[in-house]
Amino acid sequence: MPTTRRESLYFGMIMCFGMVLIMTLYNFYLNGTLGKMTFLEGISDFLIGFIIALILDLYIVGPNAKKIALKLTANTSKVLYKVLAISTCMVIGMAFFMSIYGLATTYFHNGFNSNSIVSLYLSIFGKNFIMALPLQIVVMGPIVRYIFTKYIKTTRKEMA
Image (cartoon, rainbow, N blue to C red; front, side, top):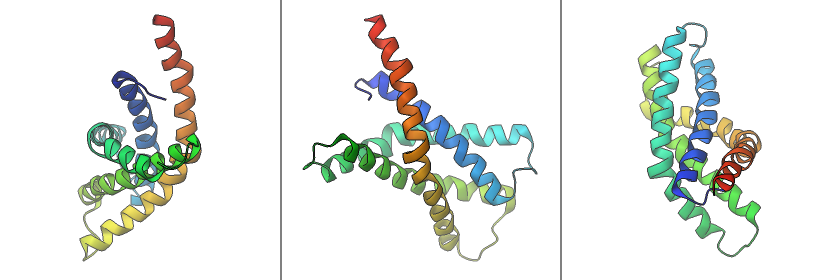
């Protein structure tokens, strides 16, 4: 997996792109805005979400998730446990913060349909977490690791 800062940036960009793309479409579907918004509105929401997610991944959630996950798996040498722990911690952190973004975009597109912002946030967080965890572990994680090891790591080794 990533061993340098540059590789971490590439890995994070690929992962964020895939996760934000799928989660943006999922949230558009949940909000009923999938067919109502223009293509440019959808692209702008995706780009804003991607930038926010990448910043969170690189500077806030990513470093803290790795620290927590490595502390939780300190007594094991199995790489699979470490990968699953990091992925789970990342999903918890990203779902927490990106649900705030989702709450803001829901308000922007539809207004609030609830009297309680807290209950609306918890609903958004729950729906995002339920979708993001299997998406990260079963789909995007393996795809991104394959792309990364096939194209990024190979390219770096050939250049050296």
